[in-house]
Length: 100
Image (cartoon, one colour):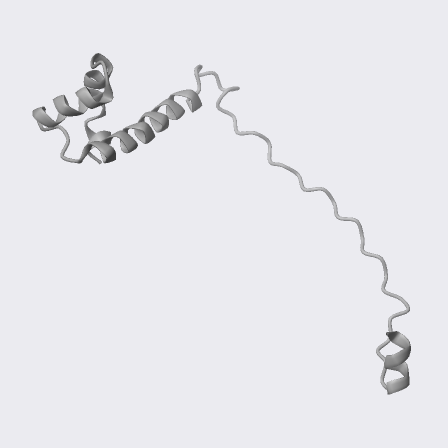
């Protein structure tokens, strides 16, 4: 949660630092984060991926054609099932033996 709320500040520090470990030390000294390094590194990678994904998925233009939703997918019609014929339930022991 800390990474998302302070994303802009943390991103500038991480971008200006030579490594993630040095950025972590600086962020911890400034009091922007309170987690340990392994949790910070793992979470930061997830937040970075999510932020870049949001940037990629946002439309680049504001034209109405770009903002239209894709047409609904039409399901293919199912083929009718064949009629069940020649199926009987054997009632006597001879009929069961013959079915097997």
